[in-house]
Length: 248
Ligand SMILES: [Zn+2]
Picture 1 (cartoon, rainbow, N blue to C red):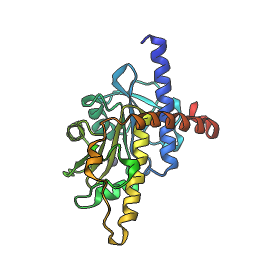
Picture 2 (picture 1 turned 120 degrees about the vertical axis):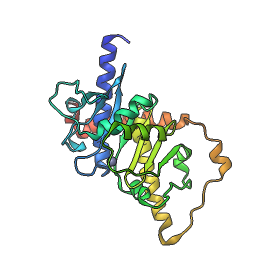
Picture 3 (picture 1 turned 120 degrees about the horizontal axis):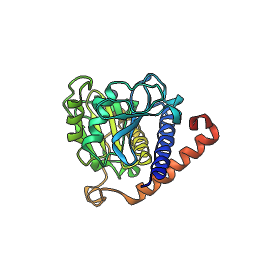
Picture 4 (picture 1 turned 90 degrees about the vertical axis):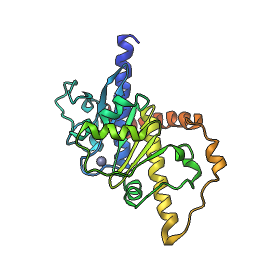
Protein backbone atom coordinates (compact mmCIF):
# COMPACT_ATOMS: atom_id res chain seq x y z
CA UNK A 1 0.00 0.00 0.00
CA UNK A 2 1.08 3.57 -0.54
CA UNK A 3 1.66 5.90 2.40
CA UNK A 4 -1.63 7.71 1.79
CA UNK A 5 -3.56 4.44 1.66
CA UNK A 6 -1.83 3.28 4.85
CA UNK A 7 -2.84 6.49 6.60
CA UNK A 8 -6.45 6.07 5.43
CA UNK A 9 -6.49 2.46 6.65
CA UNK A 10 -5.09 3.45 10.06
CA UNK A 11 -7.67 6.24 10.37
CA UNK A 12 -10.47 3.80 9.50
CA UNK A 13 -9.17 1.26 12.03
CA UNK A 14 -9.13 3.97 14.74
CA UNK A 15 -12.72 4.95 13.84
CA UNK A 16 -13.88 1.34 14.07
CA UNK A 17 -11.99 0.73 17.33
CA UNK A 18 -13.39 3.85 19.01
CA UNK A 19 -16.87 2.91 17.74
CA UNK A 20 -16.51 -0.67 19.02
CA UNK A 21 -15.50 0.59 22.47
CA UNK A 22 -18.50 2.92 22.65
CA UNK A 23 -20.87 0.23 21.41
CA UNK A 24 -19.58 -2.28 23.96
CA UNK A 25 -19.96 0.36 26.66
CA UNK A 26 -23.62 0.85 25.69
CA UNK A 27 -24.08 -2.88 26.17
CA UNK A 28 -22.60 -2.72 29.68
CA UNK A 29 -19.52 -4.78 28.93
CA UNK A 30 -16.93 -2.59 30.73
CA UNK A 31 -16.01 -3.03 34.42
CA UNK A 32 -14.55 0.15 35.93
CA UNK A 33 -12.03 1.60 33.50
CA UNK A 34 -10.50 -1.82 32.89
CA UNK A 35 -9.99 -4.10 29.90
CA UNK A 36 -8.89 -3.53 26.34
CA UNK A 37 -9.90 -3.74 22.71
CA UNK A 38 -6.89 -3.85 20.37
CA UNK A 39 -6.31 -4.17 16.64
CA UNK A 40 -3.13 -4.62 14.60
CA UNK A 41 -2.07 -1.42 12.83
CA UNK A 42 -2.85 -1.87 9.10
CA UNK A 43 0.43 -2.43 7.26
CA UNK A 44 2.43 -2.57 10.53
CA UNK A 45 1.45 -5.77 12.34
CA UNK A 46 4.20 -5.26 14.95
CA UNK A 47 2.17 -2.33 16.30
CA UNK A 48 -1.32 -2.29 17.80
CA UNK A 49 -4.06 0.29 18.27
CA UNK A 50 -5.53 0.18 21.77
CA UNK A 51 -7.67 2.16 24.24
CA UNK A 52 -5.91 4.53 26.68
CA UNK A 53 -5.43 3.93 30.40
CA UNK A 54 -7.91 5.49 32.82
CA UNK A 55 -10.74 6.18 30.36
CA UNK A 56 -14.22 4.75 30.10
CA UNK A 57 -14.93 3.07 26.77
CA UNK A 58 -17.88 5.47 26.47
CA UNK A 59 -15.38 8.34 26.17
CA UNK A 60 -13.39 6.81 23.30
CA UNK A 61 -12.46 9.20 20.50
CA UNK A 62 -10.34 8.59 17.41
CA UNK A 63 -7.69 10.99 18.77
CA UNK A 64 -7.49 9.03 22.05
CA UNK A 65 -6.56 5.70 20.44
CA UNK A 66 -2.98 4.78 21.33
CA UNK A 67 -0.47 3.18 18.96
CA UNK A 68 1.79 0.86 20.94
CA UNK A 69 4.55 -1.64 20.17
CA UNK A 70 4.28 -5.16 21.57
CA UNK A 71 7.12 -4.48 24.03
CA UNK A 72 5.18 -1.68 25.73
CA UNK A 73 6.67 1.24 23.82
CA UNK A 74 4.09 3.99 23.12
CA UNK A 75 4.41 5.22 19.53
CA UNK A 76 1.50 7.67 19.26
CA UNK A 77 2.07 11.16 20.60
CA UNK A 78 -1.35 11.88 22.12
CA UNK A 79 -0.06 11.84 25.71
CA UNK A 80 -1.99 8.73 26.76
CA UNK A 81 -0.56 5.70 28.54
CA UNK A 82 -1.73 2.09 28.32
CA UNK A 83 -2.44 -0.11 31.32
CA UNK A 84 0.07 -2.89 31.81
CA UNK A 85 -2.13 -5.97 31.23
CA UNK A 86 -2.51 -4.85 27.60
CA UNK A 87 1.10 -5.90 27.12
CA UNK A 88 0.77 -9.16 29.02
CA UNK A 89 -2.47 -10.30 27.31
CA UNK A 90 -3.05 -8.49 24.00
CA UNK A 91 0.50 -7.93 22.70
CA UNK A 92 1.64 -11.60 22.83
CA UNK A 93 -1.60 -12.72 21.15
CA UNK A 94 -1.09 -10.22 18.30
CA UNK A 95 2.57 -11.27 18.03
CA UNK A 96 1.96 -15.03 17.98
CA UNK A 97 -1.41 -15.19 16.17
CA UNK A 98 -1.34 -12.92 13.09
CA UNK A 99 -4.87 -14.03 12.18
CA UNK A 100 -6.03 -12.39 15.42
CA UNK A 101 -6.18 -8.91 13.87
CA UNK A 102 -8.59 -7.75 16.57
CA UNK A 103 -8.40 -8.91 20.20
CA UNK A 104 -11.25 -8.01 22.57
CA UNK A 105 -11.26 -8.83 26.28
CA UNK A 106 -14.06 -7.99 28.71
CA UNK A 107 -15.46 -9.27 31.97
CA UNK A 108 -19.02 -9.08 30.53
CA UNK A 109 -21.31 -10.68 33.03
CA UNK A 110 -22.96 -13.68 31.43
CA UNK A 111 -19.90 -15.04 29.62
CA UNK A 112 -17.85 -14.49 32.77
CA UNK A 113 -20.46 -16.36 34.79
CA UNK A 114 -19.89 -19.40 32.55
CA UNK A 115 -16.12 -18.97 33.15
CA UNK A 116 -16.75 -19.10 36.91
CA UNK A 117 -18.51 -22.46 36.77
CA UNK A 118 -16.58 -25.63 37.51
CA UNK A 119 -15.84 -27.09 34.06
CA UNK A 120 -18.14 -24.39 32.62
CA UNK A 121 -18.74 -24.72 28.89
CA UNK A 122 -20.82 -22.84 26.33
CA UNK A 123 -23.56 -25.27 25.36
CA UNK A 124 -23.98 -25.65 21.56
CA UNK A 125 -27.72 -25.18 21.71
CA UNK A 126 -28.49 -21.88 19.92
CA UNK A 127 -28.74 -21.51 16.16
CA UNK A 128 -27.32 -17.98 15.85
CA UNK A 129 -24.07 -18.94 17.59
CA UNK A 130 -23.29 -21.95 15.40
CA UNK A 131 -20.46 -20.02 13.71
CA UNK A 132 -18.28 -20.27 16.81
CA UNK A 133 -19.35 -23.21 18.99
CA UNK A 134 -16.57 -25.42 17.70
CA UNK A 135 -14.01 -22.61 17.90
CA UNK A 136 -14.03 -22.05 21.65
CA UNK A 137 -10.91 -22.83 23.70
CA UNK A 138 -11.00 -23.16 27.47
CA UNK A 139 -8.30 -22.13 29.92
CA UNK A 140 -8.67 -24.45 32.90
CA UNK A 141 -5.47 -23.27 34.56
CA UNK A 142 -6.13 -19.95 36.30
CA UNK A 143 -2.82 -18.59 37.52
CA UNK A 144 -3.73 -15.16 38.89
CA UNK A 145 -3.93 -11.86 37.01
CA UNK A 146 -2.06 -11.78 33.70
CA UNK A 147 0.96 -9.65 34.50
CA UNK A 148 3.72 -10.97 32.24
CA UNK A 149 4.07 -11.59 28.48
CA UNK A 150 4.64 -15.27 29.30
CA UNK A 151 1.01 -15.47 30.44
CA UNK A 152 -0.17 -13.96 27.15
CA UNK A 153 1.99 -16.44 25.25
CA UNK A 154 0.33 -19.27 27.18
CA UNK A 155 -3.09 -17.87 26.31
CA UNK A 156 -2.11 -17.52 22.61
CA UNK A 157 -1.13 -21.20 22.54
CA UNK A 158 -4.49 -22.13 24.02
CA UNK A 159 -6.36 -20.04 21.41
CA UNK A 160 -4.46 -21.49 18.44
CA UNK A 161 -6.84 -21.15 15.48
CA UNK A 162 -9.95 -20.77 17.65
CA UNK A 163 -11.98 -17.56 17.92
CA UNK A 164 -12.85 -17.46 21.62
CA UNK A 165 -10.98 -18.21 24.85
CA UNK A 166 -13.04 -18.73 28.00
CA UNK A 167 -10.64 -18.11 30.90
CA UNK A 168 -11.50 -19.89 34.12
CA UNK A 169 -12.08 -17.57 37.11
CA UNK A 170 -11.51 -14.60 34.81
CA UNK A 171 -13.61 -13.96 31.67
CA UNK A 172 -13.77 -14.27 27.89
CA UNK A 173 -11.40 -13.13 25.14
CA UNK A 174 -12.49 -12.96 21.50
CA UNK A 175 -10.37 -12.57 18.37
CA UNK A 176 -11.33 -11.77 14.80
CA UNK A 177 -10.00 -11.00 11.35
CA UNK A 178 -11.50 -7.52 11.71
CA UNK A 179 -12.90 -5.34 14.48
CA UNK A 180 -16.41 -5.92 13.16
CA UNK A 181 -16.04 -9.71 13.21
CA UNK A 182 -14.58 -9.70 16.71
CA UNK A 183 -17.22 -7.30 18.07
CA UNK A 184 -20.15 -9.17 16.57
CA UNK A 185 -18.73 -12.45 17.89
CA UNK A 186 -18.32 -10.86 21.33
CA UNK A 187 -21.98 -9.78 21.31
CA UNK A 188 -23.17 -13.19 20.11
CA UNK A 189 -21.10 -14.83 22.85
CA UNK A 190 -22.58 -12.67 25.60
CA UNK A 191 -26.13 -13.14 24.23
CA UNK A 192 -25.59 -16.90 23.99
CA UNK A 193 -24.23 -17.20 27.53
CA UNK A 194 -27.12 -15.11 28.87
CA UNK A 195 -29.65 -17.29 27.09
CA UNK A 196 -27.89 -20.41 28.31
CA UNK A 197 -28.10 -19.24 31.92
CA UNK A 198 -31.80 -18.43 31.43
CA UNK A 199 -32.51 -21.76 29.76
CA UNK A 200 -30.67 -23.69 32.47
CA UNK A 201 -32.47 -21.89 35.29
CA UNK A 202 -34.40 -24.29 37.44
CA UNK A 203 -32.10 -27.15 36.48
CA UNK A 204 -33.39 -27.70 32.95
CA UNK A 205 -31.14 -29.67 30.58
CA UNK A 206 -30.36 -28.03 27.23
CA UNK A 207 -31.04 -29.59 23.85
CA UNK A 208 -27.70 -29.60 21.96
CA UNK A 209 -27.60 -29.03 18.21
CA UNK A 210 -26.90 -32.41 16.52
CA UNK A 211 -23.18 -33.11 16.07
CA UNK A 212 -23.55 -33.76 12.31
CA UNK A 213 -24.78 -30.17 11.87
CA UNK A 214 -21.98 -28.71 13.96
CA UNK A 215 -19.35 -30.71 12.05
CA UNK A 216 -20.59 -29.33 8.73
CA UNK A 217 -19.77 -25.73 9.67
CA UNK A 218 -16.70 -24.27 7.89
CA UNK A 219 -13.97 -22.54 9.89
CA UNK A 220 -14.87 -19.09 8.60
CA UNK A 221 -18.58 -18.84 7.96
CA UNK A 222 -18.97 -16.55 4.89
CA UNK A 223 -22.40 -15.37 5.99
CA UNK A 224 -21.04 -14.34 9.39
CA UNK A 225 -18.15 -12.45 7.79
CA UNK A 226 -20.50 -10.57 5.45
CA UNK A 227 -22.92 -9.84 8.27
CA UNK A 228 -20.10 -8.56 10.49
CA UNK A 229 -19.04 -6.13 7.78
CA UNK A 230 -22.54 -4.66 7.54
CA UNK A 231 -22.82 -4.64 11.32
CA UNK A 232 -19.66 -2.52 11.73
CA UNK A 233 -20.91 -0.06 9.11
CA UNK A 234 -24.18 0.24 11.04
CA UNK A 235 -22.37 0.79 14.35
CA UNK A 236 -20.23 3.60 12.87
CA UNK A 237 -23.26 5.13 11.13
CA UNK A 238 -25.34 5.13 14.32
CA UNK A 239 -22.59 6.62 16.45
CA UNK A 240 -21.78 9.24 13.80
CA UNK A 241 -25.37 10.40 14.12
CA UNK A 242 -25.80 10.02 17.88
CA UNK A 243 -22.32 10.64 19.36
CA UNK A 244 -20.35 12.43 16.61
CA UNK A 245 -17.60 13.52 19.03
CA UNK A 246 -16.16 10.00 18.82
CA UNK A 247 -14.78 10.99 15.41
CA UNK A 248 -12.70 13.84 16.85
ZN1 LIG B 1 -9.44 -9.54 32.48
